[in-house]
Length: 395
Image (cartoon, rainbow, N blue to C red; front, side, top):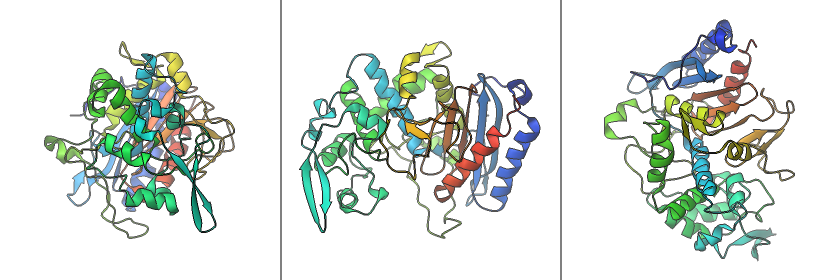
């Protein structure tokens, strides 16, 4: 039986149209019927109460297992906001300054260089300034992901197996310390391994594995009972799976193996979670850092994290929508228009590689999340879901 994470209200009490929310469900169901995605769980809350919480389709098509509200999903980069909150909890304790060089705490990153392509030659040049912790949280460190391109730096990441699940977080940072950066720190927004390094920072400052810090300081206080770096054996039957093959390309789909505990606890993308668990986390953010009498962060810290930290810095336009900036762990909406999706100025959000997505809209006092496991279709369904949720508002 699924535990309801927050109080429930009729949609109209929260300013939603039941008819329009039913249309949202019909659209999701029709996409599943067309075999575009195996299944989905959607949850919408406003003013501290849930107005919509439904499951659709199948948790595991091969097993013919129906989707349930308590299904466990690989949330990939929806791990990043949790890691960012963990870091900012330590910041609130005075353990570091945001403009501190990361090498002050992780010496393996003391001798970084930047790769500059000059024709067919690759030149390594010194850093113009160190990577700061703020750079890591806002993705301006110069670190990248190995799958974000095919240039020399990406190839070095691949050949160094910087993604390996058998390494430790310390091992990964040591590897990154031997690889060049893609850009000078503070000059480009480049999505990459930055939040993995933040996870290692949390470990170094706290003296705990990342999973232990999460459990003690975030997951247990918020009642997030199914969020972890792996799914225990007793809950394997609750794990969502993707189609074996992508419905568009026919390519095999391979998701993270999460049935056993990994050695590498990726602060950038290693967690599994449920809609109920993540809803608790999002309500804490929307409340300004507190939930059910437990304060994780100050209201001003949440304001800092969800403000734009990029200013004129640009980059990676395929991920950072027009009219948006980036804070400390979240994309942030800066304009009512420009972007092709609805929202409010000050809205913040992110998603995961397999298709999970969330946003928090402080103006509307609401948040919404949708969990799917469909990597190739993620961009389409993130947009579709947001369109349909906002069109369901009556007041």
